[in-house]
Length: 482
Image: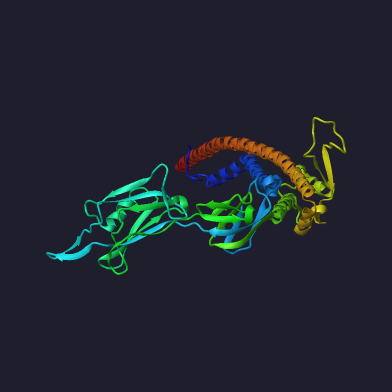
């Protein structure tokens, strides 16, 4: 690159002159950069509109799902019994009354044993092993209501070798590493006595266990040996539905029951009689989803208005003011509201002749105010949840079909409009890429032009320097002649 001292001979700021000339040269590139900025602003506006259209589609899609219309809400007459519902196609409204006969519990077996005796020998603390027998066996199984034990099938048990005179602490340690659904631990009640407790890790009558090998080794309340373990048996939770000959009982290893009413989960915490669980259609939940559809439509209309607005007082336009496609979206949406609801007949049979009475392809519902939707003067939708609830309760099937038809119409419309906007966004991004390539080419062109100007002005400074030298020499020669 050519370099020179700025205006060394001419006294002119050549770098400033070059910069001004380069601004003129770069004018086409500057216009391209402005065009990119405007296009990027427009793309951001299109994307904002598109996000709102997709929100309409999502909210409308939720309204068309059968799980929305089959959703139920469960209540319980007892504070100790909770009833919850899940979202799904199996949910059914219903009512059931039952007695909680038992709640689920895990087995607990305890025995009071002598722990290691502590003594001091030769200045050291020593624990003397306590003989608890040759072995202890823990077997998994089930107790019936009379306390009779039935081993698990296939058998599942572990025998702990205690020939080394293991203490209760070691019994607990060996059992806890054996992999059964039983845990053991020792509670020391004194320096020489403690309680060895076995506890099941799972509730339910199928998760009982039997401990053998500790019989008559325990210490009774008076400190005498010969006591056997004491057991509180595991139980399943049980509900009795109905009474007399029609009564039936259901059990659960946990305190949770499903299946009494499809889609309803019941959890019990204590024994109780006369509990009623009632599952009803969740009309409030349906109304909330319809409100979400209306809110999303209003949000889309509001965003379109903002992006296409024009202020005549300030003569300020928005990024999409002149975009007819976007402005027309508002009229299309409002038209679908003001003209009433017409939707595809879900029962239409394409294999039969179309008939306006027996086999119509479309159905006309009429004004949306019939289920609470109205259009205000400012072009916004409003939704009356109470009106929707009343209409639904009066005629559930008709309102469900019409509301689904309404949602399907707006889902299809939002999808169509979103597709159009997406195509414009793609086109604008391709245009931006193309202009950026041109800007890049201009960078190379302008760099070459700057270098040429620098050489030109450097040559000028050199020529002026030579002329100045010649002038000085001639002046000297003339002076010498005098």
